[in-house]
Image (cartoon, rainbow, N blue to C red):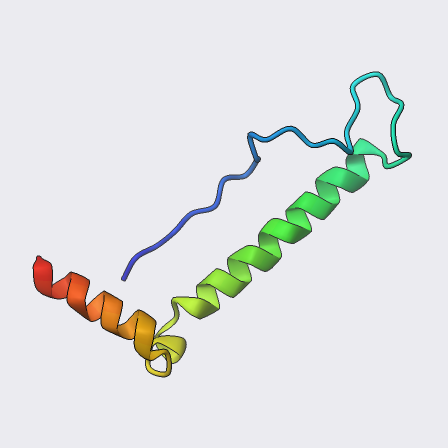
Length: 72
């Protein structure tokens, strides 16, 4: 089974955070909270997608994993 870890912080620039304190009115704390929620949601979806329960139902992904295991 493969484990994929998501980074804690994105390297990309976030246009909602402006260093001089001006911008679209969104505080850096709210942006940080939203990012954490987004990462949590993505992680939950990925954990389900690669779970044993889903692999038994998903023919495409199951075949890819079986093919990859046969190569080793």
